[in-house]
Figure 1 (spheres, rainbow, N blue to C red):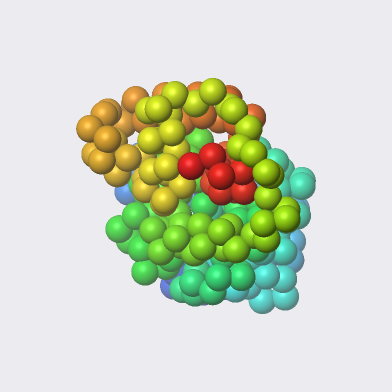
Figure 2 (cartoon, helix red, strand yellow):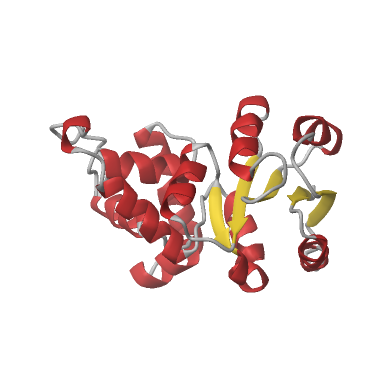
Length: 215
């Protein structure tokens, strides 16, 4: 079954370019292309996407506001934010609003397909510079709101290594290369990490790992 993808971007040329790129993958199907998010709930109901590519800067309603609505109405839909900006506050707000990943527009041609495939397997891909900003923001959480002791989630040493890598923004392939294990082994470890940390996405993993100082 094809992965159904909808695009929300106010730039027609970017939408067209993304559509052409995605059509090079036989398992991808572009089911919607929209210039604003004001009617996003109705449009999503009609086209039923599995993944949404969402521009952060949209007319009338921002992509961040749209993500909040989408996550509430369609919790199963993965949302990959895209932007030319690396503004710390907007990046962090997007992630906290429920975005499944975050990619810079200058990486669309080279990394978009890999990022979408990572979403398919339960990952939460971020451009490395974005991941670093999320980490920096998490490290600024006041001490009084952090737990005094790290809960024991019974992660194995290897699972902690994998967790540290993904928290630092490495893709599954990069984790596999760095730890000299297979891509499928990385996926297996991440699945177990999800189960042990009681989370449903890698965005939650990053948040929990930093907040509770697991790695």
